[in-house]
Amino acid sequence: MTIENYQAFYDSFTPSMIEDKLVGDLKQGFNACEEICDRWAEDEQRVALNYEGATRPASSHTFAELQQRAAQFANLLAARGIGKGDRVACLLPRTPELLVVVLGTLRAGAVYQPLFTAFGSGAIEYRVTQAETKLIITNPDNIEKLDAVNGCPPVILFDRDNAAANYAGLPDFDTEMATQSTEFEPVRVGADDPFLQMFTSGTVGKAKGVAVPTRALLSFYVYMRYAVGLHPEDRFWNVADPGWAYGLYYAVVGPLLLGNTTHFNENAFTPETTYKMLSKYKITNLAAAPTAYRLLMAHEELLDEHSGFELRLASSAGEPLNPEVIGWVERRLGCPVMDHYGQTETGMVACNHHDLKQDIVRVGSMGFSLPGHRVVALDNDLNELGKGQIGELAVDMEKSPLFIFPGYTWGEKNPFRGKYYLTGDVVISHGDGSYSFNGRDDDIITTAGYRVGPADVENTLLEHEAVAESGVIGKPDLERGAIIKAYVVLREQFDPSEELIVELKTHVRSRLSTHAFPREIEFLQELPKTPSGKIQRFILRNQAKDEADGMS
Image 1 (cartoon, rainbow, N blue to C red):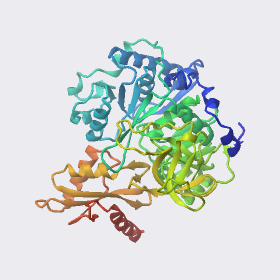
Image 2 (cartoon, helix red, strand yellow):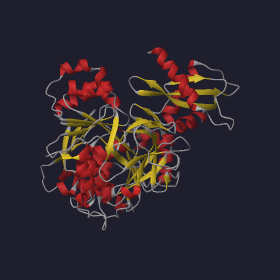
Image 3 (cartoon, one colour):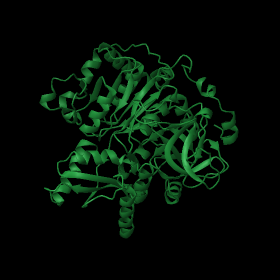
Image 4 (cartoon, one colour):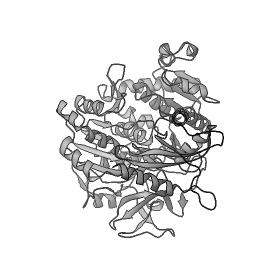
């Protein structure tokens, strides 16, 4: 496949160039299962998923097989009165069953809702309550979390035989599926109707809902084909978990949309499991967060145990790559790695494109607008900024035909000003249409590739009887990029102790998630605040930065 000139392609791009490749269209709508599965199922040998199990044997699954299983799950939903617009949640690790639930939900015209397996009961309860979720699919490892979910929707349990005896009365996934027909006509939904129900964290209040419309398929296609540079012969692996946007958008929907095999590794991410995966499946096209590349680099001695890497390209998203990581990937993994930028709300909108030749690729830069989008930097008066100027990254919606964000599902916040969507990210303009990330304007913490809103952690800490106030920030960390640190003011009747620190960490881990608990807790007499009473997190951040600098 030839690499086209970026500017020429960008200037000539129209949505019809992608629309013509799909079954549905923007006027008549789409069925996402039809687009990412049915189109490729005629070739009965074409593999959609290679699965590397944690306790189960590795297995491969064709598009044809998944088409039939998706139809069974769609029939299961229909039998329960679940259909167009209804939210169906999945609390499963990276397994074939997760993919079946995704595909079957979409086939029925319903809306798939991911639940990250590290979520605690509080995070789950908020999401399923807010979305009025109709059904949850889970497994024995996660079912106990649902016991503490008030108003929990009906549950179907995969692998019920290995669950505790008190769950024996729940419907069993395989048993329910076996009674269903393998035929189900895909339900077409409008281009502006949702097919995914996401949540994204902020700093004020709870996580915000993002309902992704089916028109996003066009944007996902452009990203996979031209930024990731995915070719028909590629063996693609996106390390990200499908419980999050980058994993669901671009480890599930994206590669299958182009007819490529995707890969799930159920094992926990470690350098050992990652190097084994790269070798065993001869991965040629890799996507991961900078944290993953940093961890691999920190354990490069393990490379001596592996040979035969066939990596052609690598992509990175979540936070900027530093020069050391870029040089290491090229030197030790043998391929170029490109930085990409996006959000749950927008999908990827600015990239260094593998398959579009750019005049310049700056180290640490998020690159240029993805075709179909126009990103700009704005000052406070919505003036577009030029070379060397710093402002907020925004999407010019009038000149972005592939822009997908309709606004937060329940109107939690208004990020639109005039014709612009404001991302909340601060960037430096290079004056040539490219930008480099400069920071967040709302205190979001990026830790090990996950974006965590401090308000979620603060609110969860406040649930504990000992906590009067809390302030949460990201503390610089070489391996994770940042760790979550909490500054806590205790109620009068409680005294600081190591035991209380452990108790508070455990509380947040169980209520929120394993990636969003504070790895450090420091007790203070009072938090720094503005005259109006707002926590001055920047003072806490500076204090934590000084601590980190003193330890390096």
